[in-house]
Length: 396
Ligand SMILES: [Fe+2]
Ligand SMILES: [Fe+2]
Image (tube, rainbow, N blue to C red):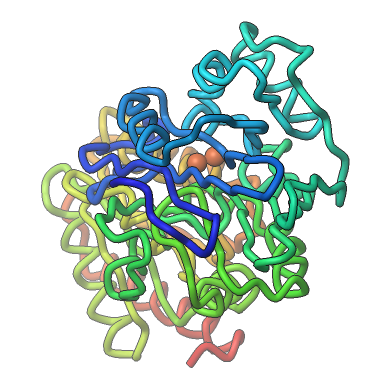
């Protein structure tokens, strides 16, 4: 994507990575992503906000070239992660008078990751410090944990444009950075939130209030679409961050010989008949990004697992570990499955991976082999327990 104008003297110069299929070697990105970089030209000085993933450096430098940039005075680093900072050394080499502007914590991280950055070219800014470009004033707002501990936002005062880096990002490669089609960006934005922001929900909630108090006219995140109508992005985040979970059960399951699959089907039927939304995923073929997205607003996580040797299936253990890492707002967990000659430690194994969360773990249902009528009765009781818990939260 070439240079695009956001408003007078503010341009998008980032790149789309259409083929990126995995982020942080963790979450699939079936629709790619973008690395957003912005150019702000004041009457005196010019600043670049963030850079791009070094793999696409050639496209980024082309965009800067097409912007006919003879001089660059500042490169602002809102976040030290490589997808935004990785081309900073190239920018400093290309523009010998350019200074790197960032906060103290970000400076330390940048130097750890890229020790070749010359320290005497770094300007350290404090919370709410400003930088005047000539009719364009940049204000730096320290917002730790909108991904990493060093993250900050840049606020362009005159145009009321917020550059919040990863906050409000979407993993969506677009040819039109201004796309405002909610059907296009909703799922990529939710998947992004689940992986990057959900683990820091408490901090994000606090920073959302700061964003609202600024009343931005445009939000320019570091991935995916630019929001010329910021209320869409803000209200989605308010729902995901602050509102109670939905009347929904996320049910990732894995079955070795079919018994756990039948239990998942039975449980799904009981819960849907009661009016609960159920999102079942066979872990042998599920897109983990979608599973992570469902974690955002599910009230219950029901994990089903078959047995491998005498323990839980590794895919079930993996999903429990992922839930533990992403810290969703779910309040209840249910465990079910089947085993062969021995599998009594399976519920303990999975429960231990969920221990860091404030989840009520309901009595597990595990059957030997195909199970019996007693198994069906236990599943009926489990579904009743889930329905009762959801009622207690007024989710119906
Ligand atoms: Fe990040
Ligand atoms: Fe990022």
